[in-house]
Image 1 (cartoon, rainbow over the protein chains, first blue to last red):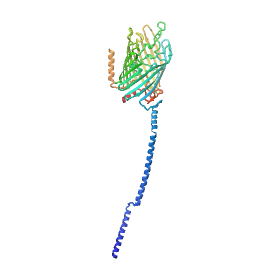
Image 2: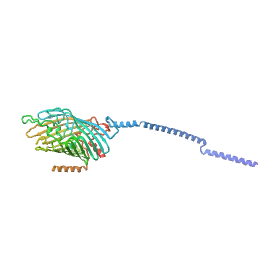
Image 3: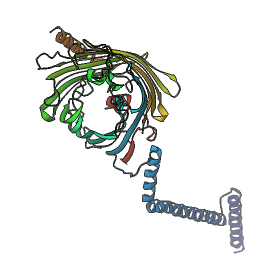
Image 4: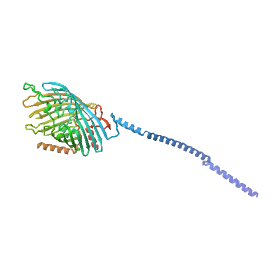
Length: 434
Length: 69
């Protein structure tokens, strides 16, 4: 018995010792205890709480931003429109988001001082420059599709003392308002342009293709400068004032502006054709060529017109051509012939040429110079020959929308049994575009 | 007859030369001159309704727009 109790005691002691040693061994190796685990869990829980709070805050901020955008959508859209309008730097009476419609007002004033001498009387006049009269208008345009545009234009010239009207006997004329355009049109890039109303006929401008830059004061319409002046002849001992310069010069520039229907083809390689049916049974047609070759430009036109009851002549052919080289040098020609079905009446003819140069010589804008010469035959009477020489200078001031100009012109008439003095004229003025 | 023949030949020449070169739209200086105006600024016209599309564009701009199309 004593021997078994001793054995059991030894076994228990050994077991305890082993357990104690095991515990010590485990503790010595670094594994977390429950307390440590608990501490770790608590720390992680705390971190989760913090992150949860931050997420909630971010959500709140996002919702706040979305809320602001929703509430102020219209105000923001209006602000964008306003900024877009302000960027355009235009004063607009009415603004619109419709990008396909435009209504514009435009105009110009062109006034000058004209000095003219016909060999008997020298006078100074204050005139409206007939080369490009003072005018204003309103134009509307609506883009129906990518190809089709509809539009209309209403334009009046407002003037007193036209430079081709004032003369020794009439220094001042009443102010006048004349209709230039009351026109509607449909224009298709593929099919051409159809115009209806009071406006340019197909042949209008056919004698005035001019790239010289001096057209505001010198054109083939030489009579627009001092055309109202009377020729003076004192060779018979009696002063004769029987005809005006404008009656002996005509640049045959088609049928001008009339009430008509007109069709223009699209441009094919620079070529285009036009035809119009005009009031009182008149009709006309024209071909135009406009092309750029590198720095050089060529513009030309040829027209034929039958005036119906509008004119005394039966038909007329006229044309002009202008070439502008990249260097600034340019050359212009114009000419024409009218056919009369009146016995004994010779058919009037004319030709005209101009040499010019244009370049930016001064900082405000381009300068243009030209010298031109033309002869007109058989207009007023058979065997009449008028020669006209002109020199012109035009200075553009681009930022002001203004051209200052000065021109000299000499008209000479050679008529059978008469010896008219030459008409000398000098005109200086400015054209200001609104 | 000679004159008609000359004009016809010249027109044929221009037609053939139209195969080269660039589009150009002639603007009549006796009409409203293209470019800026004293009051209207760069556009040259005063827009009273719509966007600020210029009523009259310079011939160079017309040519560029046609190229883009």
